[in-house]
Length: 472
Ligand code: UD1
Ligand code: MG
Image (cartoon, rainbow, N blue to C red; front, side, top):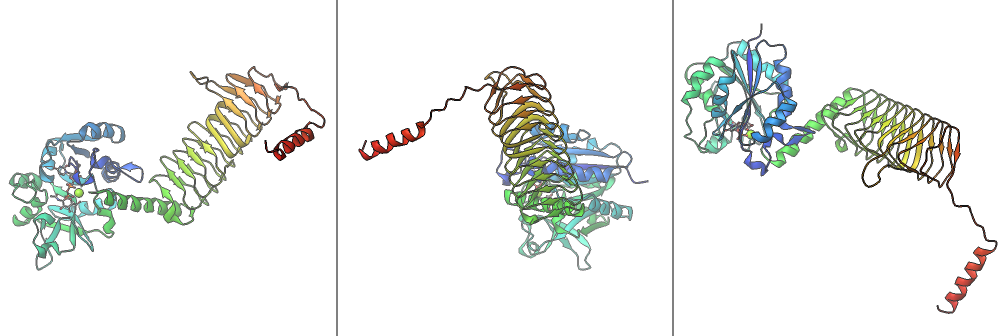
């Protein structure tokens, strides 16, 4: 049976290098807060472990962080560290929340690419007798990371922070990821020995590893296969780098699911967007939030899709914007359509260019192909909405509903002044302003009668031409 394990997620640092009013770990990469990525890895790792728990160490930004966690990680216990006095001090404040965990895994809230598979490797090292295991990485430019120092035999000796390192140590390419598994007893024995006698005047968790080696404990330093996994976010530049890597991961997952991404480097996907097989996504598309795209669907160039559900065999033509919309199987949307919140398109619906919809349900086979606003309405099955039709849903004070039945024909340039209803099979003539309900199968028009003046056009031209010649 696996050992009872607590994950301690450090998120109390100030993140000064971000130059931000927001706590660093709430900055987003691939559509999710950094801390949420780490929580996801922790959850996968902890699943099925007896007595497992997640403790988040929050500090200065906790007014924002704690409510955020209540939404995204309600199982997390919060320990408060204020002021932040270093990673060692942060782990110390979490000790009282560890329950009867025998192992403590420490994660940093700013390392979002970490996978549960790498955490499992730490665990295996402890199973094999190590007192502490740490993930490391070999980087071409080790920058501000702590350096891993090994002895002549290649065994782990200690970690030295970049700011405290001699030029020789700074030249080492193996870095500390800040991700560890500790035998709890060993951790609790060594923590009280930390001091802040260093360049940053902080209690460094990293010093625990050196002390443990001095006491004869085995410390396993395990380089990860993909150094990207342990990239930490300390600046906006690093945030952009991590964001790009996470999105690349999402693109790979989409392709693995059978989607063709054309020029994937131009496509922006959030983690967790799902794709059916034989989806085609053209360049410069963004699909974010909790969105899904069904099998056989094609998303045209330049579409921006957020938190939307798109069915199978849909064609979303270029340059459409969808937000919190649902699109049924076989529908055709765009080009240049805007589907806003609460749009619900049924099977085979057509919504064409320059059509805006909001809280609009278009039932099976309905069509609105050109230059139309449909808000707060239902459009019944097979109904055809002509060019330039507008549901006048707002009277300056409140929103009102338009209900249009099945098999209706709404001519071009009709205004439907809500609240109003048009019954099944009715016909509304082009150019009408409809203010009263139209019963089923009725014909409604509200046009001014047409006046035709014979020869009037010719006379108008003569008058204008003569005036121009006279210089008027
Ligand atoms: C830390 C490591 C460094 C490692 C790097 C990896 C130490 C002393 N150094 O440096 O060896 O290479 O991570 O990314 O551990 N935090 C707190 N309370 C504090 C200080 C920090 O909760 O008092 C949290 C931060 O919010 C952050 C994490 O701990 O999530 C790491 O802190 P950070 O200041 O980013 O440490 P680094 O300088 O990156
Ligand atoms: Mg960091």
